[in-house]
Length: 237
Ligand code: SF4
Figure 1 (cartoon, rainbow, N blue to C red):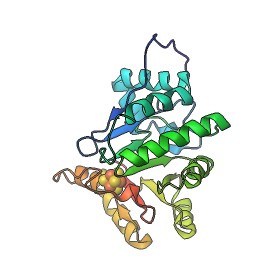
Figure 2: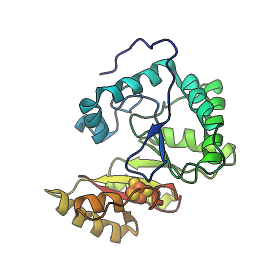
Figure 3: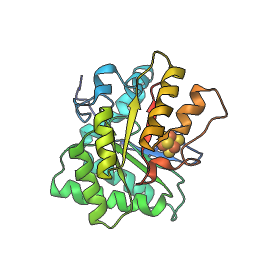
């Protein structure tokens, strides 16, 4: 349930770390997971996605996300821009939007202008960017900001069904899907690899290495999610 909270004086949104990616990577979050920014059509919201689960274990992450949502997208973007502006070009190997929570599904003209400035800074300092969203409305909105600014950033939609995933592939839309067919992690991985073969897409190497307990693959070593022409299957684990 979404709550409103007091924001301490002088508190600022700060760039987060992202342990699934190589050293030096950062995450940019705009809300808590499962709150009002996360669309109710996301099937993982009702099931309690990994991010909601993590925030239950680490309430400070949820509090940080809530503060970012409550202070508003303009101030949160400005806080991030202020930190990114101090960095040299191409110094962050991997930037991940919305490790927790999600972005708003509408923006005012002012919010669009500031978010665009943030995207431009991310493009300048980041080598690779992964920007996932859970609805078509958000994909169109944020992709339009990237396109209008002439940025090569792809906004990747998380498909809610296998049928929609296949439709996005046909339409040339960058997509991903959480693959949940199978009774256990290994079975889901096997089934995901069959589906990936059928759809000429790829299974996330990070998830695969986790399920098979192999040497861990990290985002930044693999850059698939930042590549517009690739589509990604995440076996549920
Ligand atoms: S496919 Fe590659 S870039 Fe995407 S989440 Fe998996 S490891 Fe990271």
